Length: 327
Image (cartoon, rainbow, N blue to C red; front, side, top):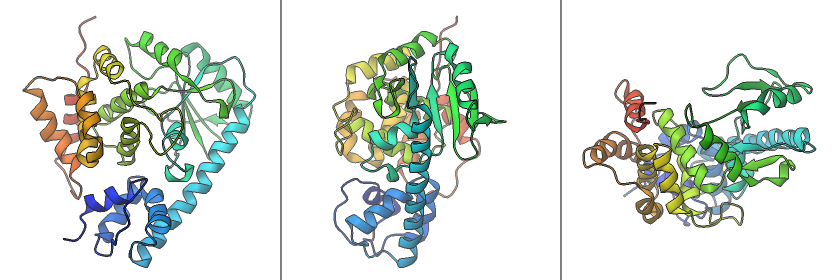
C-alpha cells in the first residue's frame, strides 16, 4: 500500500527516519499541510540529507527546502539578536518558554523548529522593568498581546511576550514554583532559565487545552520529544521524565484531563511513546475517558480530515479545561 498522510508525517517528523521510497506518498496533501503545521523544515532536512530525496517529486522538495532555508536564517537572526540584547543582564530570573526554548533543547538542529516569537516568564514585579529594558533598544509596544501576556513588544522582526504568570488565576504560588525549579540557560546569560521537563510537559498540555487543541502538529512533536527524554541530544531534557512528579503536579494544577488528552494524541501519532504515555496518563472516570478519546484523541490522531464540526474547539476546550473548586 502507498504511504498515507500519517505514514508520511511519521517518517518526515522523525529524527532518525528509516531509509525508504516515498514516491507514492500523498505529496499534494502533505506539503501544504506540513507548511501550515510548522513541519516543513524538519521534513526538508530528512528528505535531502537522510533519505537522499526519498523519490519525492522535485516540486515538493523545492517547496520544503525553501522553507527550511528561510527558517534557518530567521531563527538564527532572532535568537542571536536576542542573545546580544540580554547577554549581560544580571540579577534576574527569566524563563524562556515554548519554541525558543525547544528549538535547541529538543531538536538536533535549530533550523528544524520554527521560532515565531519569544515568550518569557518573569516574576510579576519584574515585568515592567524588563519591558523598560527592552524599550531602551529598538523594541516598541505591540498593539495586541496573546492571552495572558502582561506586555508585548517588537523590533519589527521579533515579537517578545512577557508573562507574569502562565498557569492562570489562583495559581500564583505554582507559577512561582515554576520559576524556582527552572534550569539555568547560560547561553543567554546569567539571568536566563528554562522550565524543567516535567513543567514543560504540563504547560504544553495546558496550552493545548486552552486552544481547544487547534494547535500546529509541531506542538505534538515537541511533546513527543519531552516524553521520550530528548534522546537525540545530550541536553537538559535528555533524561527520563519524573513520572510521579508530572502526575502529582497535574493533579494539583487540575490538568488531568488535558494531560490525558495531549499524551493520548501523541501516542496515536507516535507509537514509540506508548509506554511513557501509559505511565503518565492519570486515572479518569469511565465516563470521561471515552468522551476525550472520541472527541480529542482519536480525531487528532487521524490525519487527513479537511473539515470538522463547527465549534469543536470550544467543546474540546470545555472537556479538557479545569474544573476548579469554589474559592
